[in-house]
Image (cartoon, rainbow, N blue to C red; front, side, top):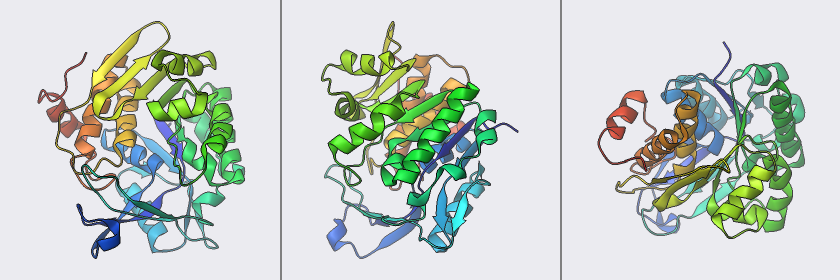
Length: 316
């Protein structure tokens, strides 16, 4: 069966400190799984979509746990590679509602960073309804960048819509390097899902409309700017839409952007118009930020419907 969406990237083990404690003083951690693309994949699967993920994990407890978790969520990981020469990357962080969150990556030389063009299953991607990826993968290594470009090229050649989230991580590369990586990759995008600061980092514009226009001029049909606690704004160059954020208590904001992507992409694949897709995106993100952890709060279809009907979100 052709998947609704295929995504790829690095999935890591996550050690999450007890919520509210600074990482330096934390003495208790919960083991989980983290990765921008796998967050979105699980979010889509919980909403009832057929989803595929590929990447590399180590032949170790963190790698096996990541694949087992995704399989359990209904994500097809049959194209994933278990690398017996490199370890699964590790992310250690704390969780706070208001103060900055400290994140420590242990991913140098990881299995995920060794993703290569040969890992891209061209026929599988060409069979999908959509392809989604983030800039994180391209920043991991030259091979991973080439794999990202190959996957995007295969999708475009096959007429498969491509969505891209820059998802800039400052600890992986500096500003000039991110611009070097993302300017060509976002040129493959039919849909750009980006934070406003990230978009400005890529194209140098400060005005919201000029920022979006830069992506549209390079081939995107729709640009969605995620505005954090303010909500989300979108344009196709002709119309504009705005959706305020859900009014919910925040426990842990990490993963909100990936959750928004899952809600928005799900809605669009189900044929909903942009305003309703924006509303579903903020509802899914609003569920996630109320729970510590990247994926724990991702709703299923029933919970999405209940939350959507609770008047936490109204379409504007």
